[in-house]
Length: 68
Image 1 (cartoon, rainbow, N blue to C red):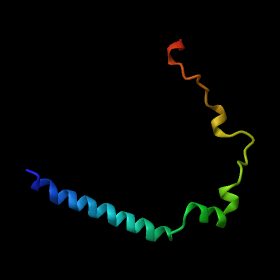
Image 2: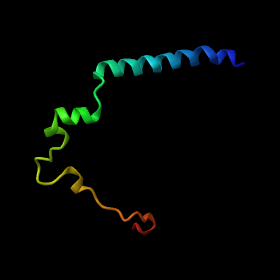
Image 3: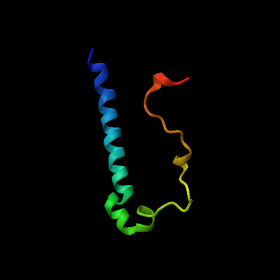
Image 4: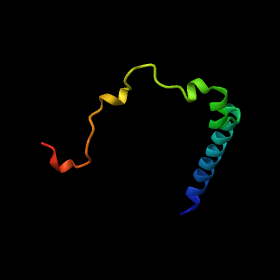
């Protein structure tokens, strides 16, 4: 019974490992800290707008039972 699941499981593990290797190679082994050092204006920069997009979202007190 388990023999029918072994081959697909091995293929899935191989695909995951291949994707991990490709992601590592294509990213150039750059960490987030290294990216922030290379691009400080993007990593630490503020918004150019006076108000952020999140300021228009309604704020909930977390109590769903009081909704009318």
